Structure formats: structure tokens, C-alpha cells
Image (cartoon, rainbow, N blue to C red; front, side, top):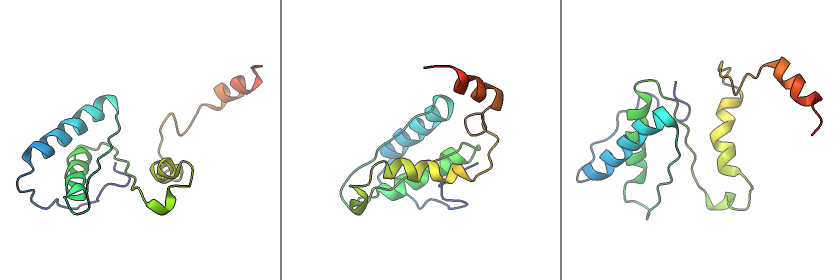
Amino acid sequence: MSDGAPAGKVPRPLIGRNDDREYLTAFADRAAVSGGALLLSGEPGVGKTVLLDAAAAHAAAPGTRVLRAVGAEFESAVSFAGLNQLLYPLANSGAADPCCDPDPARLNKAAATPS
């Protein structure tokens, strides 16, 4: 399953970016097992999106869920805008995920416990 990853998109060839691509695919492989987050920054037009598309396609191929967010200057004053971009697609995904579909009995017990 892939949320926010380029569905069916074939990455463009990356000329001269082998080291960067290897780093990102290795990160994606590790993150598929233990989770992770990555921030990729750089000047406009240097190929960040193409690298991320390739890494997302690599990660999504075996079924890893890929979440992506994009920074925008106009959202800089909005608290948690990036987190909202990451989690909003999951809210209505209907995924049978323990963290998205908590056990009601455990929630009731936690709510009844004084803090």
C-alpha cells in the first residue's frame, strides 16, 4: 500500500546521481523494517523530486506504505502543516491498522484510569 507515493509512476533516469539514489534506497529499505523519516533539502532544480520519486517507487514496490509531505512557505506559520499532510490520507483510508483502529476495551480502560 502506498499513500502519497507516485502510483504507477516510472522514475526518470538519474544521470550522475548513483550515490544519492543508493543512499535513498538504502534508507527506504531500513525504514521499511524499523521506520524512519527523511528530510531532503536543496536549491530549486537540483533533482530532489526526481530522487524522492525514485526512492518512493523503490519503497512502494514491495508494498511499503510511503507517506510524503511538501514544505511550502505560505504554510510556515501553520502549526503541524507537514504532519497534517502526512497523516490526513490515513484518516479515511479504512486501513486495518492497530494504531488507526484501537481496541475499544483498552480505550475505555485508559479513559477510566485517573491520571
